Image (tube, rainbow, N blue to C red):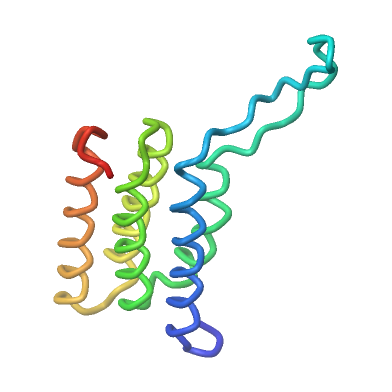
Length: 137
């Protein structure tokens, strides 16, 4: 918001969305590291998809809540990622972010029609994430 440039934020969201689509399809590593004899040697902290989702979207969502373009792009990106998300905890993280985006828009967007457009997008994302993962590509 300091430079009032939604295009940079939208471009960042697009790049983050692409990376998150790839990440959500990957198996998350086990925290347990074994040596060649199978002996447990390390229990490492694991970064989960919800952790990465928070890091990727929190600041953009917080600072972009007064931008219709940024808010809508965040919801569109969540919808795309949802098509690849199969784990319930990943889908829950996507829904949690969609809910926060919608709440932020209700409070941060002064124009009724803008808020309604965001609400319509949120409802679409909510429906998509509520569907069975069997319909995901």
